[in-house]
Amino acid sequence: MHRTYSSLFLKRAATIVVILCFALGCEPAGVEAEAPAVVPVAAEPAPLDVVGAVADRAPELLSAYIRIDTVNPPGNEIEGARFLQRLLEADGIDAQIFEPQPGRGSLYARLRGNGSKRPIILLSHIDVVPVEPDAWSQPPFEGLIVDGAVHGRGALDAKGVGIIQALAVIALRRLGVEMDRDIILLATADEETGGRMGAGWFVENQFSLIADAEFVLNEGGFIRRSEGRPLIYNLNAGEKGPCWFDVVATGDPGHGSRPAADTAVTRLVEALGKLSAWQRPIDVGPVVAGYYAAYATLDEEHARQFRQLARSLEDPLFRDWFMSDPVAAALVQNTIAPTVLQGSSKTNIIPGEARAKVDCRLLPGHDCGDFLDDVRALIGNEHVRVERGAVAFGSSQSPLDNALTEAVETVAANDAAAAVVLPGLQTGFTDSHYFREKGIAAYGFVPIVVSNEERVATHGPNERVQVEDLRAGVVRLVEILTEVGARTQ
Image 1 (cartoon, one colour):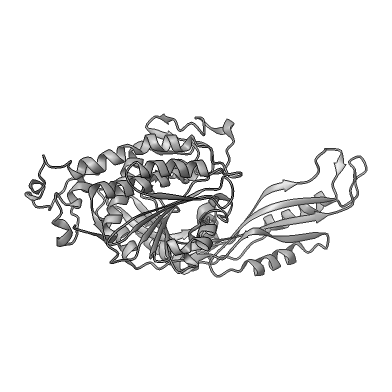
Image 2: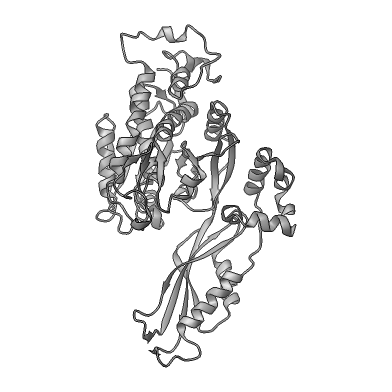
């Protein structure tokens, strides 16, 4: 593997190129043989030892972080923020905690560079979603390390992200690398329910602390591992916008033994049936079209269709095959998922009102208000109303050609597994939109290699991350940060 860096940076002792290459276990072909001899071995620890020692702490720290209960609701993220604060301050990195409501804590820290370039924000969230414990093979909140993996809620979403980011900052501080950019570390509350008490509050009330930032590196994309193909660096430059809403049906209440022909419950069921049967239009946006055009090089069987995806989806056979994958379908269609049903509290009582909460995600260019007007017209029942939910904001997107995207591409090109970068659209939403709305380019990418099985477990049972992939994630992130802005002292 041959890595390319500026000659100025290569003058550092042993060079960060050699350091990170060795930490990843690759062969440093093309690097001058005499470079390692520049380091006075007896004078200070070798950088390889520094990065490796920091990365080795990741599994045990993630285990401890998982054991802190931050299920949202209610959150109680303050304890997670204090955990990260202690970790950073033990290495001499000052960290502040902000608590807009009791227990809803977020952490801010800043590793200073020379200021010649604008800062980069490393963003993660402290809260996690609830679990169904009986579906787990390991206890979800004990952070057990079993069969080479750290198990538990938040292992990937997003406590593992927070640990990788914190350790990368610690590693850079220990290395003494002078950065062109400050590195801002943000670990926030409340992301899983919209971020209003976390990133949203921080951007609104403490924006002066981050107003100079140029980039945000957040959760969203991972490095995908699949058999027979190179690693895929999923760099998400955009994400769909949530348009959560309630469907509320009304009717005369009564006794279960004397039901009317139409009740609140039957009207709600009918309305949800119409939503389920609705054939929503397919819309292939430019980011998705570009993703599949690039992916065509990795899939010979469907290369022709992927290169012209919009036209190919007009073919019923190909469309049925493509749309049978829920992830692929969500990239080209607005999605609707009823998730919560509320009716009577007793079997023998007919309620006067029945309600369904619906998780809806909209593609770029689609407006929540207009979409809900279409929903109302589709349902067409005077006894059923559609209420816009609290979580609703537009889709967002960042540019694909700048110093950060180039740094990710460089690291991918130098990966021992011959990785490729596929910029894409994220079907879920994150806190990135708060920063994009302020003009800060934000990207979803975590440098952890995951299998498809591990990726889909992020909100399901058996969430986990491989120990070696967690350690390598620290090293890759150090490499990305170094690439996007490092100088010699």
